[in-house]
Length: 211
Image (cartoon, rainbow, N blue to C red):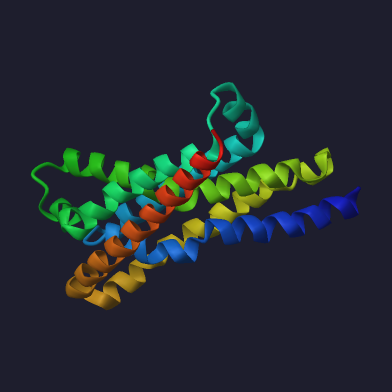
């Protein structure tokens, strides 16, 4: 049993980490937190990782049941996540994120940053349709409790690593400066828009296939 547990963990841990891909989120996180003081950047990273971890643990344990109860498919979830990502990408392309640097009120700035931590950082960037599908498949793999138990610790360890990865993004921000971050913000907005369109296209294609 211990051998099976270790074997399942060695499969689940890299699978979850790769699909969450915290290194790929770093440039986007950097562009979206441009101009923030270090403590707020760390708080945003912590909130995003906590929410993302909670989402994946929830879907790992109850995802199959929830999708059946509400008759929601993963394809529909992918389309919804794509639209959320597209809205954020358009704001980044228009430079709207920079409004937080001269926010008229700290409360409004704090509210906006909380939204950024949850959407799109936590979902769909960290805990997106792909990672949700991955943890659900890992939980069902083999159909036994020994193969299912290692999934949750794998998720937790992945998001601990993700937090420290995003926390280090501040070092890059200080190196690039304001001009470099502004350029990166537009570039990441364009990439995010393309990613959002891909999410929507793939989800729509799968929805059309299955009536």
